[in-house]
Length: 149
Image (cartoon, rainbow, N blue to C red; front, side, top):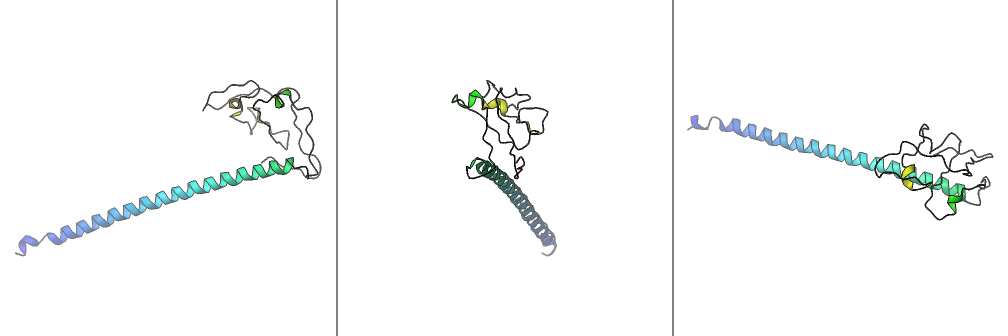
C-alpha cells in the first residue's frame, strides 16, 4: 500500500507551491494597481492646485483693492462684440501664447473660435495669427512684479 501512495506528498507540495505562487502574483498585481491609482491621484491633485493657484492669481489681479492694477487701455473691438474671447494675464512681454516659437505657445488657441480662427477638434495648432491691433499687453508695474504662472 505504501508503494502506491509514494508521489502523493510530492503532488501536494507542488500544488501548495502553485497556490502560493498564484497568491503572490495576485498580490503583486494588486500592489501595482494601487501604485497606479496613487500616481493618478497625485497628478490630479497637482493639476488641481496649479489651476487653483492660477485662478487665485487672476482673482487677485482683478480686485479693485489691489493697488498695483494697471487698467487696460486700447482693448480690441472683439471684446465688446459679444463673441467668445480669450484674455491672457501675462506678466512679461516674453510670454506670447500666439507665437509658435515661444515656449508658452497655446496649442488650442486656434480652436477657441476667436479672431476668425477655425481649428480642427483634437488637432493641436501649429500657428496662430497675431492678435488684432489695439490688443492690450500691459505687464504689471510697480513694486509687485508677478511672474507668469
